[in-house]
Image (cartoon, rainbow, N blue to C red):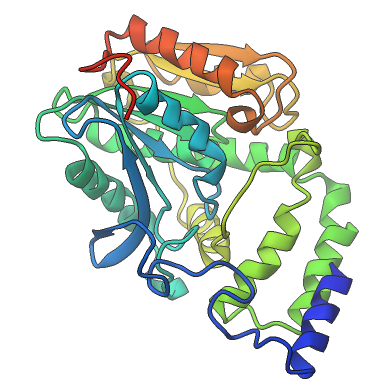
Amino acid sequence: MKSSALLLGILALAGCMDPDGPGNLVPMTVVEDPTLPRIEIAGALMHSESFGPANAPTVIVLHGGPGADYASLMPLKALADTDGFRVVFWDQRGTGLSQRFDRSTYSIAGYLDDLRLVVEKTVAPGAPFVFIGHSWGGMYATAFINDHGDYNGRLRGAVLSEPGGFTKKQLEDFLGRYFTAGQLTSELVNDATWSAQFMSPDDHARADYLDAQLALRGAPAEHRNITNPPPFWRLGAVVLSRLPELAMEQGFDWTTHLNAFTHKVLFLRGELNDAAPLWQQQQLAAHYPDAEVITLAGAGHEMVWEQPDAYLTHVRTYFTQIGFTSAAPGVAQ
């Protein structure tokens, strides 16, 4: 990490690279690169792709973080290619290749309204949809369900992959397992502090670059497969720090109305992830009236990327259970 920052400084001083040049540190966003696919939501340009028939039942994919992107969840595109569903991917506000904003503009309520607008913009009128939410994405989906229920009967279910918690206390407990005491004083954090002296976090590209250096290693508790690391385009450093900060400052409880959501919910977890043990995912699942927890043997937190076939098998079985069928099964797009 120190060598990366030092090399960056040397290259800049030598005139070989301008760190402020678009795309030099991290990939360009939809604002800087007009060729990227996008949708506009509440005045924000979001990096987004949709696959499958426009009028088909729709799967909305919610990536983790907060602050990550959907690159590692692209195996879910098979639900469009093979099964005939509409599958919507999008980098959430201020994340991935989506537009960046000032720290003061973010709010939990704003994020929830973004998701409502994504549903309205990407799902055909009257068509049913489900969520597949990974990590933070599972929390995001649950917050939406707590606020909106089954969205007038259109939201038929959700697949939640290792959400961290649905209340402030649950999230605090999760983070206690995710970040061990040793980690908090480890070289990982020291390197980030050291590098911040040379690259101002006020600049989005520089801050995102620093976060990417840390993310490459992953958290030990997740048991990431280092021989098959999950891809990502660009992390949103401001979102990654701001949304958890707001959650802890304001407190939250996204379980108050979950008992009204009577559709079955599927929880999928990786056997190796120490931060999301079976008992913890069962505790979260108990907030839903009808939920099942399934463990993927030999998988860590990045189960979608590491074991896409096993993951998709469970998703397809679940879709059959809840009667969520595509309009044109087996039609490749």
